Structure formats: structure tokens, C-alpha cells
Length: 154
Image (cartoon, rainbow, N blue to C red; front, side, top):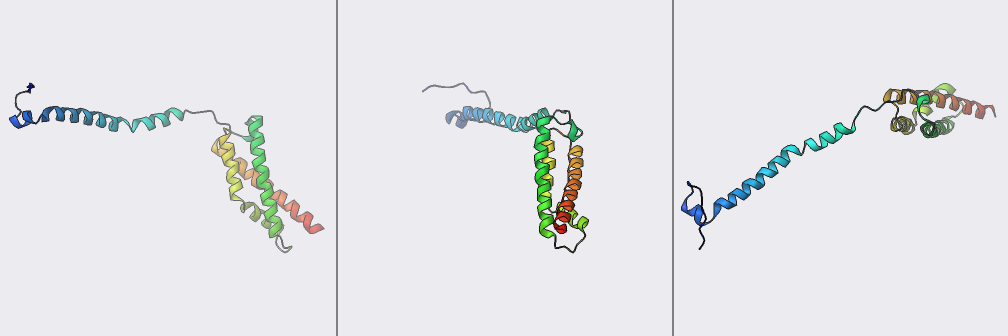
């Protein structure tokens, strides 16, 4: 039988059943788990803070590069076509054309959100994206008014 040297202060039962080395391993394992648990929340925070550097934001649609403007223009065109289609469906010939066209432009909220989302993805600021979406809504209303008047004139 091989005897191990245990520090003083341990009982014969602890020495006999070899509890001290097991407790040491458990303590070492728990120490690493506690360190990992303590520092783990810092990892995503560090990643987020590292990735959110202040990139320069474009302050208008005209300041976007050419390909980005083309992407935004395609989304604006889909918003305008949605607005015109809704206006033509709603028109019965009795309502005020301006109110009807504005209601139709309000009936396409997903397309308007797509304008904002696309502009922000292309590097524009949120304020510039919302301003361009509002201008696009006015243009969509004007196009819907023109379409309704042309249809009523026939």
C-alpha cells in the first residue's frame, strides 16, 4: 500500500478515502468555471463595442454612391407602383383625388419601411432615410393623383 502525504489537519477518514485530492480537483475545475462565467459576458460586449465604430453616415440621397442610389431608386419605384395600384383600386369616381391618393400612399407601409431600411443599409443616416421616405411618399401621392385624373378623363 502506498501512502500519500496529506497536510496536517485532515482526518484519517479523509486520508483513507483519498478525499483531499478529489476536493482539490473539484476546486480547480470550479475555479475555471467561475472564471469563465465571470468573463463570458464581456466577450459579446467587446464584440459589439468593437463593431460599432462610428462610420461616416451619408446625410442625403444625392450623397450616396451610384450603385446605392440605384438600389434605393428601385425600392422607391416599387413603393410608387404600390401606391398607384392601390389608388386605382380605391377610386370610384366620387372622392377627392388628393385625399384618395394620400390614403393610397399610406396603404403601403411595408414599401415605405423598405426605403428606410435600404437607405440605412447603403450607409445613410436614419434622419436622411426618413426624409427621403417622406419625399418619396409625396412623389407617390403626386403620381397617384396623375393616374387617377388620367383614368377619370377617359
